[in-house]
Length: 116
Image (tube, helix red, strand yellow):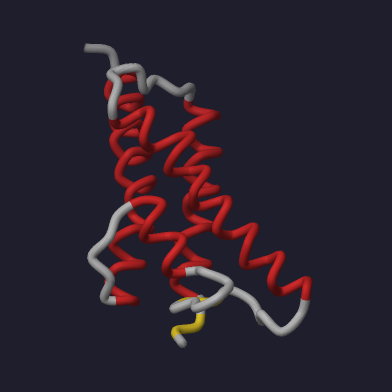
């Protein structure tokens, strides 16, 4: 086996694991036993949030919270779910690195969010 193949499989595995990482962190912080969009929308709801990433007293803060919900839903629905349910997960190293950076940002914001 060529070294590039090993590196690619390693990147692929890391990518898949990191794309799943936000959910256990959210569950641990909230005590909710939900998954995917249900977990995200209940946790970061504008009406009765459990975690907030920004002040909800201003339109800008509410937009930040809504945008964060949409980013989490997007990474689950547009990246993680399709890749988890197919064998077609072969991103280039550049694309994998971009997903890793984006997912890392989401993880950081979940960890830094305020528990209400």
